[in-house]
Length: 473
Image (cartoon, rainbow, N blue to C red; front, side):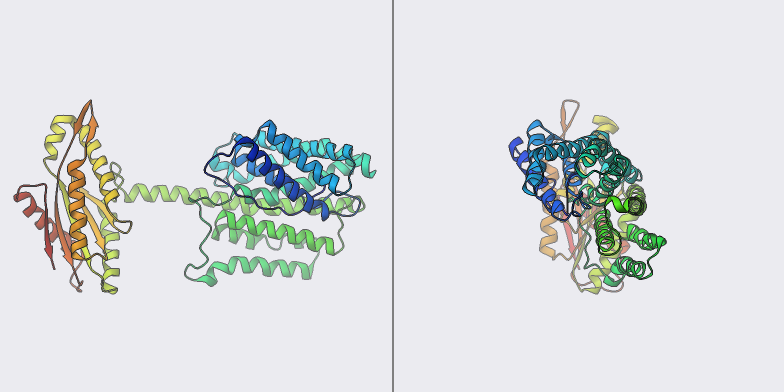
C-alpha cells in the first residue's frame, strides 16, 4: 500500500497481446493515476483509506499473465514512486512503499494465477474463498514490508502500523479486485436492464439502498450487517459483475460515511478502524460466495438441460425438444400472422455408408451433416434429429421462395460435402420434403405439418433422391 483512491478503468481482455512496452506503459500509467487519486484522498499525515491501485494491477495481471515482465515491473514501480514524489513524499520513502506494494501484488498473483480460469474469474463456489485467501496473503506480504516504513515515517507503533496496513489492503482487494476478475466477456454479457418486469429486476438493488439508509439512521455496532440479506438477494438475482459493482459501491459509501462521521482511519482510532475494515471484508465475502455457488449450479443445470434436450451424437435438438420448441415457434407465427415452413430431411442410402465404413463412419457423417446443416440455416431456425438419419427443420417467418432456396442450399451443400474416414472420403446426398404455410390456421400443429412434410419427402425419394420437393399451403 502507499497513499491511494478510486481507479481509472482501463480496457480489459484485449484479443491480441500487445508489445511488451505497450503493456508496461499501460500498467505503469494505470498505477500512477489510481495511486495519485488515492494519495490525494488520504487522511492528513497517514496512508490512504482507499487504495485501488494494487487490486487493479493484480486483476490485470491475472487476466494477462504474460504482462508480468521486467519492463512491466519497472514501469509499475515508476508509477508508484512518481505518484508519491508528486505529492511530496521523500524518494527513499516512495521507493520502500513501492516495494511493499509490489511485494503484495506479486505474492497474491503467485498464489492465484495457477487456479482454473473458472475459479479465478468468480464462476465457481470456491472463487470467493480463493479471492479472500489470495487477497489476504497479498495484504500480509505488503504489511510485513510496509509496516516498518509506516512506523519510521509516522511514528506509529509497529503492531498498529502492521494491522492497519493489513486490514486496509485486504479491504481494498475485496472491494476492487472482484470487479476486475468478473469483468464481463462476450460469453458473460452485462445484464440487460430493459428485460421484462424492470421493477422486479431492480428490487434487490433497491432493497440494498433501503437497508443501507436504515443502517445509517439506526447506527450501532450491528448496522454493518443490515444489508447482508439484500446483498444475498442480489447475488441470486444478478450476474456476478453487477454484484461486484454493488458490493464495491457499498464498501466505498461505507468508508465515505464513516469518514464523514466519527470514524477516522488513523492510529488514534486503531481498533475501531480495524474492526470496521474486517467487518466490511466479511460482508463482501458472503454475497460473493453465494453468487459463485449460484453460478456453478446454474452452469451444471444448463449442461444437464443441454444433455436432455440435445442428441448426444449430433448435438442438434432431440425429438422431444424439437417438438416442444417447434410448436412454440409455430404458435408465435400464428399469433403474428407470419408464414411458417417445415423441412423433413433424410440422408440417401445411409445403410450403404454404414456397411462400407462401419458405424464409426456413419456417426462421423451424421455429425458433419448436422454441422453443415446448421451453417446453412438462419439463427432463428431450429433443427432436430427425429431418428436415425432423418432430421426436421422449422423455418419461422419465411416466405415460400426463401424456404425453397434454403432447402436447395442444404441439398447443394450436402452434395458437396466430403468427410475423411480411414484415408478415404465419404460423401452423401439428402432428400428434402418441404411444407410451407403462408397463413397458419387453428388446425395447424407441428405434428400435422411433419406428417405432411414426410409425405413430400417420400415423393422426393420416389423421384430419384437427392432433390427437394415442396408443397405450398
